[in-house]
Image (cartoon, rainbow, N blue to C red; front, side, top):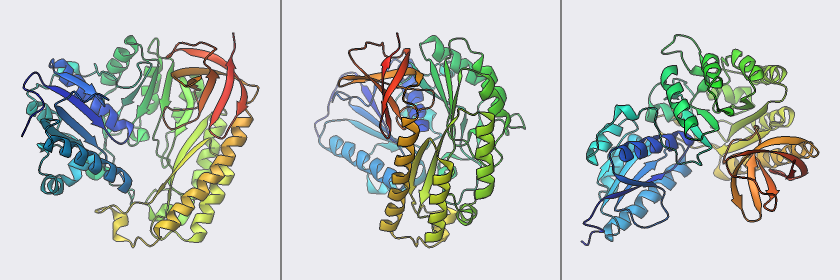
Amino acid sequence: MKTKTLGKNKVNIVTLGCSKNLVDSEMIYTQLKGNSIDVTHESSKDDANIVIVNTCGFIDNAKQESIDTILRYADAKEAGVIDKLYVTGCLSHRYKDDLEAEIPSVDAFFGTNELPRLLKTLKADYKHELIGERLLTTPAHYGYLKIAEGCDRPCSFCAIPLMRGGHVSRSMDDLLIEAKSLVKRGTKELILIAQDLTYYGLDIYKKRNLSELLERLSDVEGLDWIRLQYAYPAGFPMDVLDVMASRDNICKYLDMPLQSGSTAMLKSMRRGITREKTEDLIKSIRDRVPEIALRTTLIAGHPGETEADFEETYQFVENMRFDRLGVFTYSHEDDTHSFTMEDDVPADVKQERADDIMALQQGISLELNQAKIGQTHKVLFDRKEGGYFIGRTQFDSPEVDNEVLIPATQYVRLGDFANVKINAAEEFDLYGDLVV
């Protein structure tokens, strides 16, 4: 078989799935760079002879995308376009034996905690001195800070603990070193991620310690925005809200996946909370931080979800008026508790329910956005696209939330903040002009 090159190796890392996977890819990228290996991330050029696919195994659609990507590069290897193909990440961790049997042209599969072995395969050393020196693949002005790995929650539908293991917090000292390093290199916004932010510190500090971590990060000079994603509602540490309310550089934003508005479904999902307690929590959050933007995620069609359960969730969304919301259709994941139940909601009904929720949310989002017309907001600009500069307020996370657009004739520098007066609004976009 013809090989791509006999010269120096070049590695291309392809990332699928969530921001936690992206951080893992950035760690691989940093270690390879530290070993003087030529490496790119999701290169559009066809010039790498080694490809690493970092997979997602969260739900059916994500697993299929990962498999399709592996097969595409396996075909490229068979055609002599690339020399080596390695697969890592959640899908690889969970289904390694099956994947090895089904796709033998992959040179090696690695689990989520096997970075040193992956590096050794690429003739690279794991350099401990690079911890905290992570290179970003996002625009330099924002980056993700993973404060913990794994999860201890017993959610019935979720396979993440099978792929990522139990919850392990990173030390505050390590996180501060990394945060300061990123800020020195131009990062203005850090997005704190974990499978469950609210569990932070219980394992190493014997108490929920997210509030102290936020205080210490907030003190980092030059860090303009700190954003919280993936908070668990049951046992939410309310002292976090006091820190958020008192610190200007902590975004008034919280991503809290709630999964359902039906008490019966929440019990079946093993979420440790009821609809009534969830509503009380949301009210308390909004009372303590009146400006806060709440983002949530729901699951449509979990086993046993009746039309009445769905209607309860629909009313819950209508009453709570979330600022941001997304919906997944239920995915029947083997080895989870929900897998022991009959997947009894037909696929078309799951999708119809998800579509109904999103149609409701679209109307809510339009109303909330139209209320912002005439207001002036601080906006961080991410990119230029077509005839617009596009950015976000403190109430919006990259990739998943609303955006602010200003005409490109009103010049701003990407990665900078500017004040924008909103003059028009759509369901998921705001339009405005620079305030000079």
